[in-house]
Length: 301
Image (cartoon, rainbow, N blue to C red; front, side, top):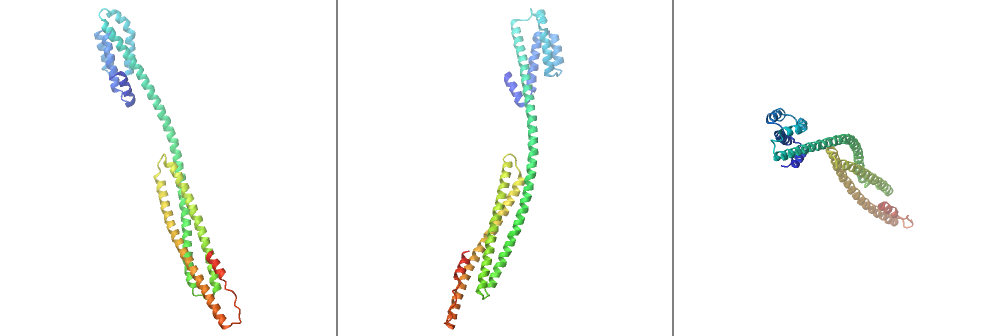
């Protein structure tokens, strides 16, 4: 493997053991070229075999390079041109190793500083997420209270509808037509008010849930919040249940309207029969016109 391959492998993996071993081997070969045998063996025992760091090896190598002119003069006659070329090649490799080590150390320091900055930003974002999560929990509690209050109102409306149905059954036994018409008017007004209240209640619940779901989705695009999602799912299930109750109320209102229409027809028939009977008993008496239009207006309302 070449010098560049060793350098980039050490940079991306963080394992400098093989890289240091190559430097030690190259420095040992360089010492054999420029030092006498005894001095080279002593230097290798002190620095290479003694486990010296790469920085100390490079410092000792610089000292050896400073001593190379004198040693070359003393042993120049014994060295051949081939050994001089090898010496220059090893020297260039060592300096290249030193430059690459400095570049790697600079890169690692830059990455460490970037990592520290990222950790600070992450800590700040984490604090913001905690505050947002707390706000969402408070919002969910508030919405739950609102849903409970509105659920109680729906129960009250159901009770009132049951009471109204029972009162309608009692009104069937009453013979006064004016009382029946007035009672039907009051019941229709009450039903209209109940429908308006239900519509407002449903729209308010839907708007609040849509707002909460939108806020939760903006927070979950980066970081997940499982507790907030569970609460939202529970609220959705509750809204579906309320929609079922509301559909039931709608069906009851439709049946009540149908019964009211039938009752109005019966009242109209009763009035006509009373008119016929009164005309037979007293032909000179001119009865008043039946208030059929009033009954029709009550059914249309």
